[in-house]
Length: 249
Image (cartoon, rainbow, N blue to C red; front, top):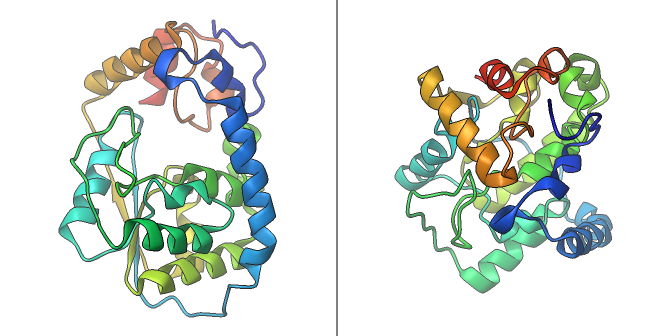
């Protein structure tokens, strides 16, 4: 059984993390308040822009190599991405990008390494999960298991406007590891038009072993859920951890 019997929000799992994977509650609150303050000012920066370049969205099951493939794409092509510094401004991306340019310059660097999707260098790629979680309404588990219904509640015009302005900052295409977007592939294509999806697969046994290792490292307990959830989450959440992981891959 899972350690938490009735989690409702994805953040409910944070308190069970151990060691280096613990999230600072005070840091999280600070960033949340900062982003809320900046959001109103951020809105005044947005222009009505066309999408002129493609968005490349990388997705796949947990531990399938999505972070590495995103890093490779960012390194090999003349394409923009959200780095670790700018990602802190998930409700004010133009502020984050401007500050990143001022402080870090236009340096793009990756060493093609990550610790369960987390990269260290301020200029390395970030999956921008808080941004996608907010705009695609994936703050709670219902946003995933009821993604078809939630899709109609998403502010697609605003999301499109923000992404067009982020793209305009770079004046080139953008690449994202966008697992939350994988629940809305058709709608993303319809709204953004210029979209390329890169779907990653991995041997299921290898992926399952890696997920089990992640659960043990994050929580010191294989029974606590780790990473993204399939829409069938409610059907497998009370199974033993081996069957849960099988459902993830």
